[in-house]
Image (cartoon, rainbow, N blue to C red; front, side, top):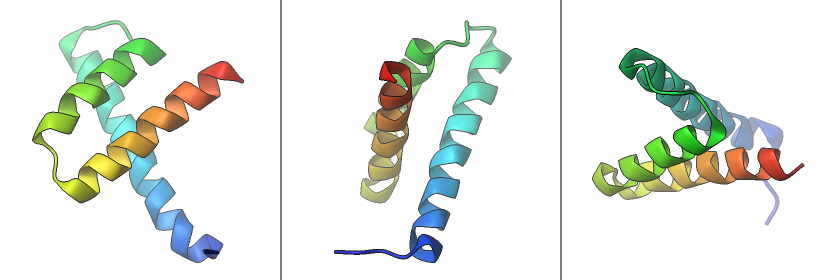
Length: 70
């Protein structure tokens, strides 16, 4: 299955928004801002998310973990 960039871009924009929102929440709470704290925050938010949102949060977590290994 092949997707065009115009089909994928809105999904990556949403993943970036989710990560940005997590950063804002952690900073607002005064928690340390690390990849681990972001991943933990996002994983905790999986419990209250719908199916589509869980997929996007999962993509955000995978992106953060992949960037860390590079």
